[in-house]
Amino acid sequence: MNLTLHVWRQASPDDRGRFVTYEALDVEAHMSFLEMLDVVNEGLEERGEEPIAFDHDCREGICGTCGMVVNGRPHGPWKRTTVCQLHMREYRDGDDIWIEPWRAAGFPVIRDLVVDRTSLDRIVAAGGFISARTGSAPDANAIPVPKAHAERAMDAASCIGCGACVAACPNASAMLFTSAKVAHLNLLPQGRPEKAMRVIDMVLQMEAENFGSCTNHGACETACPKDISVDFIALLNRDYLSAAVGRSG
Image 1 (spheres, rainbow, N blue to C red):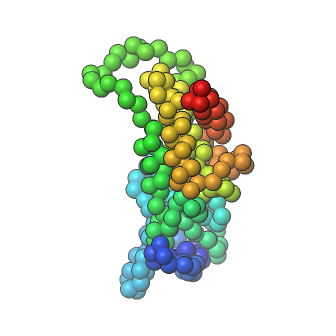
Image 2: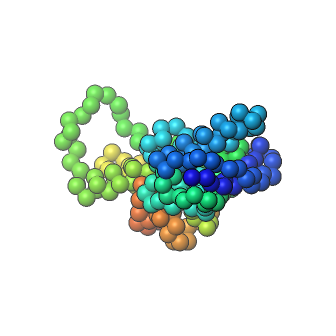
Image 3: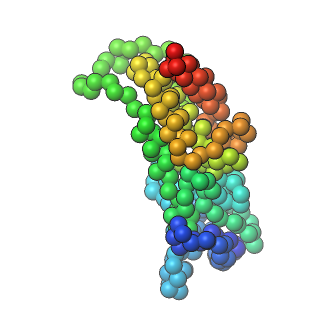
């Protein structure tokens, strides 16, 4: 099939950027979306043109590196799927596809479809860890964990930090990401001693990174490739209020 791509091209952070139209010819349905872009880039390089810059690594929906908005939807039209796992059988011959980077003040564009997501790393660095003494591995049953807590912690830990939640949110909020990173530690016994400090520090860092406020729009949960629930945002709000009251007291 033959497709028309409208791709956001931006040479540098200071460049205004614009959409540029390319023809993707003889695209096979079994190709992934990124493989299709690889073929387009090969053609651009053969013609002496600058290839389209985009992030990618594992291409297995695990690392969270890839990320772009496809026809207005982060990671494209499939739910619970990263863009590297989106396949071209979704499209039909003659389709127009609009491709652009994440749009958020906290994700400045570096080049083309590549954005700077180190803001998410700084949120994690602010408190997404425990200070437990290291040593030999403890017995698996040394610290009993209620099954419900363990399962919720695992659900939160499935966040891959891709940033789709931010890109989908009309306020460019990072609350779903932050709440998941807070919850997967706070729900476990090892994370309890630093729970209040973790919540305060990570929320303050999130606010410092120019992300917007959460207004319970719900688009973040819909766009999340790991189907992380907005219930974690409610949990974060409760924990933050409790920590703030405790600190003021």
